[in-house]
Length: 142
Image (cartoon, rainbow, N blue to C red):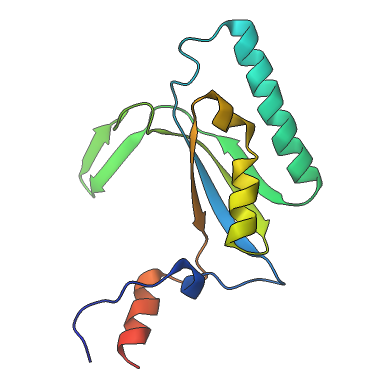
């Protein structure tokens, strides 16, 4: 038995539920609107809201929420650091949880997000059915 923990793929950890897998889409960049007029910001937000609403109505998106731009980072029980924590272009502006048949379909959906046209970036991750560390331990014990 190896003492090293092997890397496990997203495929190993994300098991389809009824033929679909849940994915997390993190929306990054809290400063995209810095050089944009108020009217243009409204137009961009309306366009994104329409995209989200359409996918919610289709049953694809389960959760879609913006996040407040400031927060606290808890490093341990007694250590709390005020945010922001990183460059605003890397800060998480919101999140979406949705379902797709496979990773390729999830990438296709993510690529259709209107926020990509305005400087935001997306991080896509399958939602694991159990902790990756548990999967690695099980793999080591086989």
